[in-house]
Each structure stands twice: as structure tokens, then as C-alpha cells.
Image (cartoon, rainbow, N blue to C red):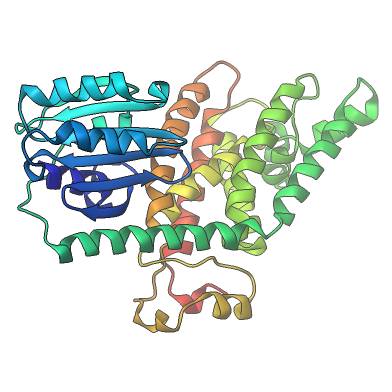
Length: 382
């Protein structure tokens, strides 16, 4: 039972298939395995009841709980009968910092019970789908630790590589949107002229004023500043995340293509006036899904060949010409968050006054463009 929990909690492959972020297995020696969720302040000590001599479980628990200084500490005992819960309750009564600990018992059937203290959702989720396995050897444990270490290193390199690059294109688009919002605010002839000239409207498209299929994305309702603020916050959140990875040219191309696709969809399928950057924002959401479909351990893409050469390891010739844009550790959590964001935005798109065709057209285009970025052979990326 202990080894099944170890795999469920810390093996990146097992946790990834279940849509969970793996814990870091930081120590493993009989009868104890120690896990940490990086950045959360949570630690878990998993004790194998079968490896503890009769009558010594209470002493083991006291030592573990007595060493607790800060953060949240959870202790789980794998195996054993009803006496385990009694020992855990007694240890809880003797422990310091009782508000910062949680105690669990996983019996031989795989049933996990919280005996005292705080909840550890990560452990409870892992216990719902325990993998079948035999006893873990030293090599098995070393492989789990190494996979987890490699994923964490990839994630840290990714964060460092993207955090130091300023999102110039994203900020420039936002600045233009604010400028046009100021120019179209008010009830004067100039404001109305600018708005009428740049909005995506059927009569303009009928006169072959094709610039409207792009320019509309830079306009927002001058009577509704919330429209502007929500779109700009979304644009900055997504654009500042993607631009350092894709580079300025690709991010600009992605935004323009998504806005154009949204404008075309709106012009073909609606008869109203369309404005707003939502098509481009949906394109960035779709693009993130597309980038998650790439293959092989990825590196940050940039506009500079020299930067890419410095960033790529010496063994990149082993790649098949495809590139995974996100490290696995980041990709798993990102995929879950994106699904939630997408469901919310789909629901919002069907509210009155929302141009759903612009949203869906931009999102589909962004997905396809980014899928090309993620899968294109290297010779086509410059």
C-alpha cells in the first residue's frame, strides 16, 4: 500500500495521467517516504506500517510530529488495522502545533481515512486511483526521484527564460487600444468619425473597406470602460505569458491572424457592428491549447537565432523537428486551468450583445496558428 501511494503521489507519469501535479519525493528510507509540494508549504510523511515493529508506531509518530517547525505537515500510515487510527489520535493529542498538522490512515484495501487535523486534497485525490505495483526497488525509487527532479528543473528554466523578457508587442497593442478608447470617447464629431471608420460594420465591408476586419479589434465601447479593462487585463495576462516564449513577430502574427479570423467570422455570420479585442484574446487562449500539443522537451522560442542556439542543449539533434513549448510540470496545471477558462468564456459568449462568432473564429485561428508553431520543422520557424 505504501508503494502504491508513492507512485500515485510522486511518479510524474502516473500523476500526469490523472491530471494531478506530482509531489516531490525528497526522501525514501524504510519505513518512511517524505514528500513536498513545492511552493505550497505542505509536506507529507508516509509511514509503512509493515516496516514498523509492533508497539513502536506511537514513538515514530511522536518523532515525526515533534520535528515539525513550520508549514503544514501531514502524516499518513499505510497498512495496519484499527489500532492505527487510535495511535494517530493519541499522537495528535500529544503534538505541538496541532492546527498545522493532518493525520491519515490508508488501510490494506486502499481506503484512505482522515483521522485528525487538516485535509490534504492532493493525498485524497491520489488515493482515489491507486496504481497497481509490486514492491518498489531502490532503482524504482531513484527513477521516480530523477523524473521529478528533471521536471522541476525544466519548469524553473522555463520560468527564468520567460520572466526576463518584456512583452513589447502586448504592451504596444494595449497602449493603442487605450489611445483609441480616449479618441472615441465623448459625443463630438471627431470621436464618432474615428469609431465609424474603424469598426467592423456590414456597410463598410460591402464597400470593400477591408481594414475594418482588423481595426475593429483595437476599438472598445466608449460608453463601457469595463469592456476595455476586461479585454486588456486578459490580453496582458495571456500576451505577457506567450510573447517571451514565441517572440515578438510570432505573437504579433498570432494576434493579427486571430483578430482577422474573428472579424471575418463576424462579418459573414452577423449583421451588427463588431468591436473589441476579444477575437484576439480568444486567439491567445486557443494558441495556448495549440502549443500544448507540441512534442519533445521544449525550449523558449525567440526572434533571435543566436538566443535559440544559446538556449538549446547540445543534444537537440535528437529531436524529430518538433518542439514541446511547455515543460511537462507546467503543461499539466496549465491544461486544467485553460479548460476552466474556456468553459467560462464559452458561456459568456452566448450572453446578449456578445459577438460569439468573433470569439470562436479568433479562438480556432489561434489554435491552428500555434499548432503550426509547435509542430513546424525548425527550418520554418525563422
